[in-house]
Image (cartoon, rainbow, N blue to C red):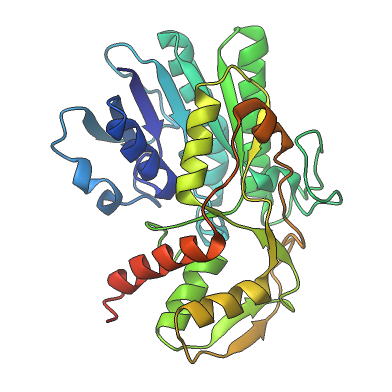
Length: 313
């Protein structure tokens, strides 16, 4: 049985990781300051002998009694609404938080995994995006607080790997969706589903031709699990390479919700990426991983979750 600390453990992805490791018989310590995470995501684990929760901000010095085998750093606002509302804390958790979690892993002799993001590629000029692409990022744009925080976090992680010989992993996570996403997190899928279930106008930014590649949460968790237990230190893209335009995604969600909603268009936000598609060659070759859940299957599960949250029969 491994002892695992997950920062951001009450968040969307972090809480699913808590479930995975508990189900596999490991001990999990979830740490979260609940700025964007929610107790609801993990309350079903309260009382489990192998689970504990600490409400704490990991940008501060973090002490955990006892040994740790793995430290997974998932603490960070992740949606544009969240990191524009909390720009300084987003930068702090990507820099100071990463430093503190790396220091904790070093102190405990634990393996460290960083939750990075496809946003390190910015508005990419290379498509699809392989790990050796350095990106096209506006460091002083409104999205820079998230993009640069994650780019710094990757640099810090590799510095600890090279200088301190720390065992590290870097997961570059592409758009992920599923149950436990927040209704109000501002990203396309929660917004489209919430609007469609309530037969409201579905808002598409720009002309809708910008693309995304969306991965269901169960597939992502499996990819993170395989990366953690590999011995590969450099970044690995984790996401679904099946690309879809935003307008087609909106239309698909309206249909799956049996909704009467109509699409309306709004101005595209500043520095919004025009394309986003992972090259997952490394994940396939090194981890033997690729997504298995179809988009429609994942969307139906997510729609059911939101239907229950919204109390729509």
